[in-house]
Length: 249
Length: 249
DNA sequence: AACCGGTGGTTCGCTATTAGAAACAAAAAA
DNA sequence: TTTTTTGTTTCTAATAGCGAACCACCGGTT
Image 1 (cartoon, rainbow over the protein chains, first blue to last red):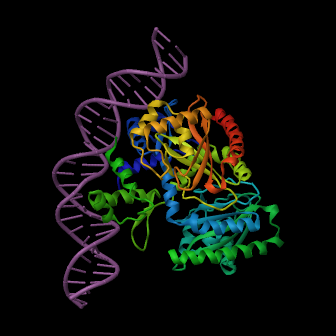
Image 2 (cartoon, helix red, strand yellow):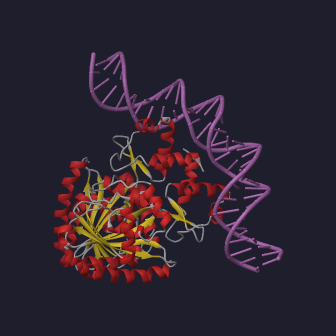
């Protein structure tokens, strides 16, 4: 393990939505290290476009290189070309937004969004991480993980996202068992208040869960009687995407 | 400048669309350094999710952290909330896709795309870099840059992207002068074959070009007589976005 | 089964690189 | 104006990284 690189990557973590700009000395104080060191790291990052210095304020912020790497990363997964069209079709058929959530370690990460025509955007954008124990899109992934992994997620703590987030370990495991039997998940307001989700899992060639496909939107637009129709649409997409995944993975 | 960090960022450059996966020794040979060093760098990056190792092949590839940082980066610019809705409106009015290109050093970078309903996707995705001397979206930015910056771009070389890319220095400068007079640019097949572009510039609070807004699509869908109407739509969007930019920058 | 060339991962001593105090110039703030 | 704070540069002690040699493992060949 390289300490210099480790320090540098730790530094990057400080550039967040809440605090996107940092002065050299300001950041050094925050990290409890010499401002000289911070300066050198930022200067090196800047040469590669990972941060850039605003000429006026002299403060540093994230650079466009992240966009470039994110772009090639998404290309690697053939999402835009293969999966997105299917998602878009479901979005148009159901008039709701469709999300592709990928499994990454003990968390989920949103890889693609097909917006419905109804322009109601959510506070979820591509690249945002999610906890696996709340919301249909996440639970449907967790349901198919090995028991040991499920435990690991639970051990990390079940902090509630909303008033409807399941906080009891046993209740969660039971819920997951049911989802596994059904082959799909439905939830309302678990991850975000007043938002429903209908989700199905996606598997790799060797039958491991790797992702989920989700229809989501404001709860008032998806009463119980409309769920079966949306689910049918989603399951058709699932099969289609599944076939493509087998060929790749 | 930190050499260790510099090396590490140089290493990342090798993960491209063309070669997204690397073995430790393979990459070491490519970079002409010890495989031990490469291993240490990859291991450190992996702890932060910037690369990940595929369990089967043991090869490394880019990790999801880039998506996360790209996401917060885009949030910083308030694009999704403020500018995207305007772009979407133009896309629906004209039935063509609308692109937001940002100025970054001597290059452009695509920050947002509002797709038209007609599902014809281009090989351009968010985060891709573009050269400033070809195509309406780029030239309209270059046209408003100071002469010294224009020279710098030209000095770097005018490699043709297509058969219609302007390669003569004088011809280019003359074209830019005209664009500056008109306040907008129109081109066909300069950056990508059989693709037209109509573009207008966007300025920061202190009257510096920072970006461009572009309508683009297959050339057969935009004959000369339809250009004025599309331009009108685009210029309305320009004013609207401009007003928002003044408030931010 | 033994072999071989390949892989990713580990160890350890020498040495190049990095950290951090101090100093600097410039720009805000007093 | 002075004072404080900023980003940046310089210097040297000492830490952290380099790389040869190492191991354990895998997959194909003999």
